[in-house]
Image (cartoon, rainbow, N blue to C red; front, side, top):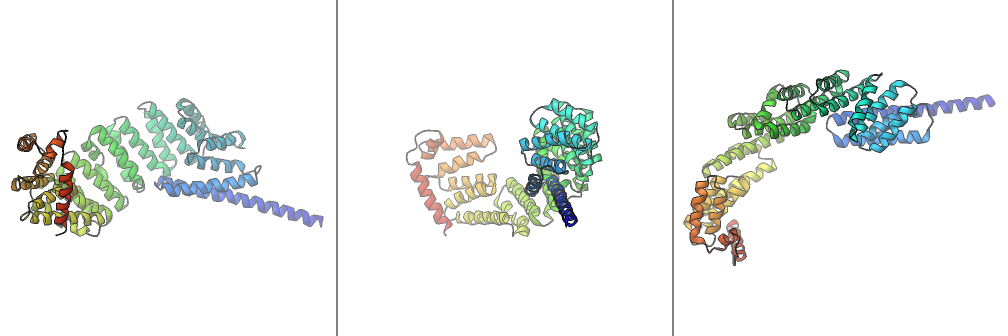
Length: 443
C-alpha cells in the first residue's frame, strides 16, 4: 500500500508538472501570435493575445510560485505586460528574471527588456549601457533582434550614426520577422535626419517585403512627415518603386492614391491622374476612392456646368459606393436647381451653394452666384450672393471688382454684418431665404 501511495503521489506530481509546463508552452504560442498580430498592425488582436498571456502565466505562477519553470513564465509575463504598456509590472517581472534565472542566457535577455524600459523612462545612457551588456552575452534570436532595434534607435536618436544604421540592418538579419519593423525605423530616422537617399532606400526595402503592406498606415504617416519636411514632390519620389511592390492589392491601391495626392500637390497633375486612373480601373473601396478623387479634381478645374455634369461618367462605375451615391445626388441637385433658375433666379443661388458646398466647384459656384445677382439685383439676397462670389473668387482683381459692386448695397443687412456692424433684419432675411429655398427643393 505504501508503494502504491508513493507511486500515486509521484504520478500526480508528474502530471501537475506536465500540466504547468503545458501552460507555459501555450503562453509562448499565444505570445508568438500576439507578436505576429502586432507586426501586422492588428492592434486589437495583439492586445487580446497579450492579455491571454498575462492571464495564463499569472494563473500558473500563483498556483506554483516555486516551480522550476517560473522564470520562463515570468519572462513571458514581463514581455506581455511591456507590450500592453504596463511598464511597472513589466519591470518587476524582468528584475526577478534577471536576479533569479538559472541560466545566463535568460538573465541577459531580461536585460534587453529592462534596457527598453529605461529608454522609455528617458534614461538613454542607462539603456545604452544595459543593452550593450546584453549584446555582449548569449541571446536567442528574438531578444537579440530586439536589442539591435533598441540600440539602433538609441544611436540614431543621438546622432546620424553609421553604427545605428548597422544595428537596424543587423536586427533583420538576426530575425527575419522584424525586417519590416526595422525598415520602418530606417524610414523614420532617415526622414528625421533629412537623409533623402536613405529614405528612398528604406521605402524600396519596404515595398520589396510582401508583409510591408501590413504597416501601410505607419508608412503613410511617415511619408506625410516627409512631405511636410521636403514637400509633396519629394515624398512622391520616395515612393517611385511602388510598381514593384508585392503587397495586398487593396492596401497597395490605397498607398498609390496617397502617392497620387503627393504628385498633384507637387504640381505634377498628369502623373497624379495617371496613378489615380490605374487604381480606378480596379474594384472595391480604393477604386471608388480613386473615382471620387478624379471627379473632385475635375470639378475643381471646371469652368462651366457641362464639365461638372461630365463627372457622372467617372462616378457611375462605382455607383454602389455610398460616397459616390452622395456625389451623384449633388450633381443631380445642381442640374435641377440650375434649370429652375431659368424661371426663378433663386434657383441659381441654390445651385451655387450646391456647387460650392457639396462639390467643391468654386469657379462654377462663382458664376452661378453672379448670375443670380445679375438677374435679380433688387432681391434682398443679391448682396449675399455677391459676398459669396467674393469668397470663391481666386483672383484679387475679381474680388476688388465685386467689392465695388457691393457699394450700391451698403445698407444691406448682409453687407453690414460682413463689415462687423449692426445688421437689423439679418435673421429675418435668413429665415425667409430658408423658406424660399425649401420651396424650390420641394418642386
